[in-house]
Image 1 (cartoon, one colour):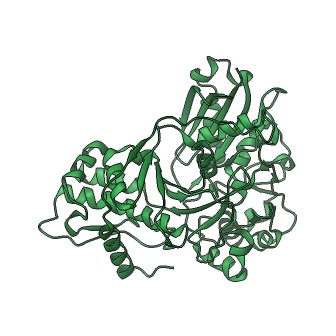
Image 2 (cartoon, rainbow, N blue to C red):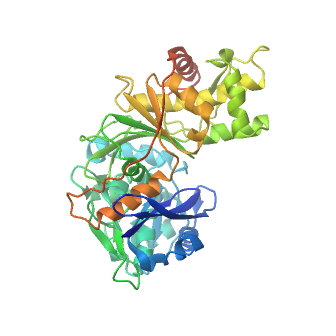
Image 3 (tube, helix red, strand yellow):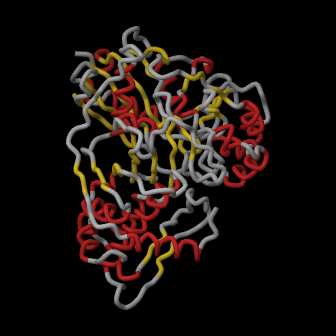
Length: 470
């Protein structure tokens, strides 16, 4: 029995899954927390990963010495800057840092065809925007840059033990979120990159394709290093996602994504034309406000998440006319980085915990309905929604989602899908390219409920009245 490990290095924590390579059976798991914030010292990610890999749950089965391959999936877009010695220049700017909104607009203006070239018009979340922000605001740091990489690139490099920045690798899925990568050609767009940093002598990670190797673990000729992936591509691979499915992930951010054989080129910036890790594409819409809105509701009402769900189910669809627009910390889709949320329609009748709970959950979910419709320009309701993420475990969220999306909602077994996808990729490195590991997902809950289109229609009416969107 060969063991493989998958790592999810997310905003909040690092999670490690140890799996049997042929079946995907989970043998062991470990985790460690990450610090909060929109800029973080990458060293804390490395310390957390080492802590998780040294957890008793992993060492009891022999630790890294017993693992045939390991892959890392990480939070997309994070800007990691290294000098010529491989030292970190400044804290990494994360996907949820919106200070570079002006730079995103500048880059889009400079390259009017950027959506054609990279699959995406830029917003503040993209790596390119953050890189240009450093160039504009921290010239001393910009002059020191010798290499630019992403969180999963840097962690994979650290696991390899190399000190040479020219050994840093990435994969097309994560590179497709930088804003300076062409996922159709599978190559960097150096013109865009050089505009962002003002130089041409900076190293960008080598692209490792599909199930090829990035290297081996430090001091080991046995443990293979997979290419790794962006977190959303890892989740898609972990879910065995097929064309026609739309994933709604309710985590720190909210994402809606699907697998496609064709790349999207949305000049509005709503749909990101990402790549997956198999050679296909992963059109994706991201919101900044998802599970955190449900957290905020629980805090406001001073109840647990389960109690919040119970309250929400005591209300009716539409929360008796109460509508929440969930832009608490600005928004990425639509592109409103400086917006704030709004609770509209308060009356003496709906100013009660049950209706407020319902409005918050519906608001968070309507933001995701909006996201899912934008995947194909609102042309149709998806055939099936796969609902994942921490907030998706709440039964009320599941029930309400089924009334808002207008199609069946599938809730797969709770697991670390991103880490599972990374582990499945690690297993793939042990096989021939044609032998994609077939890992059964397990029994899922399917929910069918009466469609309530008026709730989303009301949400859109309030949104368009209060905000100028693009």
